[in-house]
Length: 114
Length: 116
Image (cartoon, rainbow over the protein chains, first blue to last red):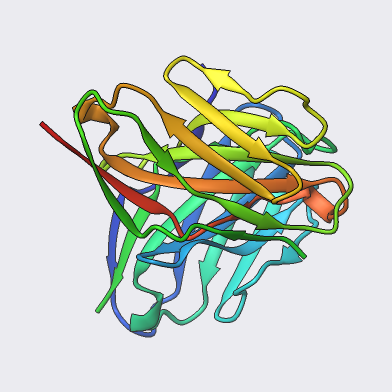
């Protein structure tokens, strides 16, 4: 059973804290993505990675960074959490070089910054 | 650049009736794929159906079918015989052949509510 696993379902953090969201996939996928989901806005791409140590900015990278040291793990980092980063965060992975295959998603992390 | 538009923020449907969820897209890619995902209240994203830009026939998966009209750039999801368990958010998405990582671009979603 293929899996994308996010480290936490729910997180509550204080303003100014450094926050790490971890994502691990066991499908040997090249591509990994971090999305943010807000009501009425759908899923917006924060960052993605198409190889180890490679990263590309998505549509809303400000306030975030990422790390991909191993193929199976993609971390999203909030350097200094702010209340406007309260949201649902979804990690996804896809096979490399193929545009006609679906993405597999983690269960989501609902982050609240107080 | 890719763009997906879902114009129905919320919809009601009577149980056992069919419902169509609208999706229009814009892309400059020659080859692309269109996807529909379901997100129940639990939050996970469930892949429902895929349509390739060169597929001549509309995709079907059980009660789900995709009404693909390439000239109109639309990819509407049709759910037949709605069930209470179909109540969820539905997202239309696309991937193209001309961007690094072949990233998935999503629409804003439609919340479907099935009435008993």
